[in-house]
Length: 72
Image (tube, rainbow, N blue to C red):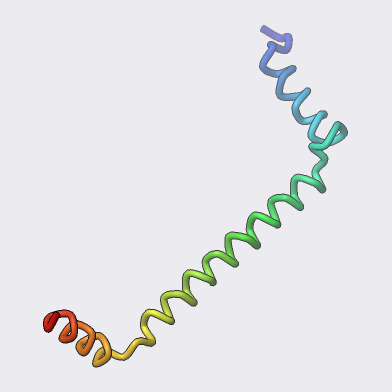
């Protein structure tokens, strides 16, 4: 029971690979995370802008539009 199991070696290997190996360098991973957060914030801001445009339509214009539809 004192030895390391296969799961311990897999975790140690994964940490070593992330720190020192291949494309999975910490700086690359953190840069991708930052890009994702920026894209998410931009998307949320665009949704807010679209909601403001929808709220900008005066209620009387909507009522006139409904009346025009009823006449047809």
